[in-house]
Amino acid sequence: MTASPDPIPMQDLAIQHDALEPALLAGLAKLLASGRFVLGDPVRAFESELARLCHTEHAVGCNSGTDALWLALRALDVGPGDVVLCPAFSFFASAATIVRLGARPLFCDIRPDTLNLDPEDALARARSIPRLKAVLSVDLFGRLCELDALADECRAREIPIVEDAAQSVGARDASGRPLGAQARIACLSFYPTKNLGALGDAGAIVTADAALASRIARLRAHGESEPGVYTELGINSRLDSFQALALSIKLAHLEEWTRARREWAARYDALFRERGALGALEPFEPDRLPLRLLAPAPAPAFHTYHRYVVRVDAGRRAGLIDALRRQGIACEVYYARGLHQQPALAAHAPALPLVEVERAARECLALPLYPELGSARVERVVDAVVSHLERPLAANRRAT
Image 1 (tube, rainbow, N blue to C red):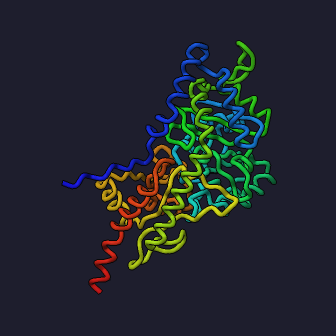
Image 2: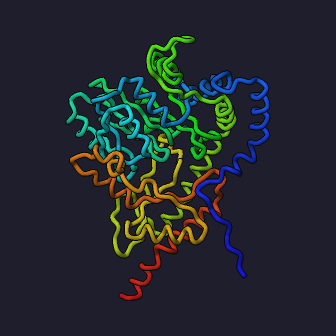
């Protein structure tokens, strides 16, 4: 009997943590001896390292990427009656945080070739709101959002941009600048599956604005301005010392891991193109492979590939998912519906349609990608995807 091939997960954290286990355990032992488990020296050290990575002045650690968004918007005084523009193709927290503050999300469409916010659509919608409070941009799957004319409009109207950089640590934009270059505040998540992942929930905010950083540091500790004095209502969102310690240990490997992710993503792209995948904006046609690749990020832009995502003809996606899983190959849909289609956010659905968001929700599929993936696994995934999608094409050609 032929043995089944080894399964290919979306990512394999066990491999990563096996290599880091001695350093993590040594750090934990030292931390246990100190008795300082919340904030403390490990947090201050990691905040300094993160600020240097992002080429900015200030970093403030917190409990999660979701809390980072809340803290950023709260520090900008977003509240009841305000409107915040954001793309409708993102994780739920991007918009839910706006609503939690009593504000209204103004959803905009995305670019079909990058899946990031469409600056022209966003600009048109922003101009329809005379007193827009803020813009929340999202760097989807590790590619920084290119804001173009929208950023110029925001500067002219003094509208702050908050960058949801939960998936893009280490990325650079089309001018070679790190995340946060066009934003007043950038928010990061260190959920375990992120490119730089903690061993639990963790997040951070980076900014060049000292006053904002100071206020965010107060807000993460209930609004405490000095011991026992609370000048405003904040939340309890302090970064645990062990998570900061783990992140510092991992940060030393981030460049190497990112280089590997980019290598495997480039290998995916090359193999899929060899097998007939379409360009980012080419239409699906009956006699061509129903698979499109996203547009590459041309240098000096630097995509960190938190996820490797392709677009599959909507009528073929479910069958492909089933075929891959039967072969032990993981895949995931990010995201199955636009934020405006989520029941909890339906009251904020825009009057104008979000055509590209809804099309992407029907077509996008993420394939396995992690630093230790290896060329052989990439080739196996590509072969499984293309072999399944080619079968109807071959049958059609025989019939004609």
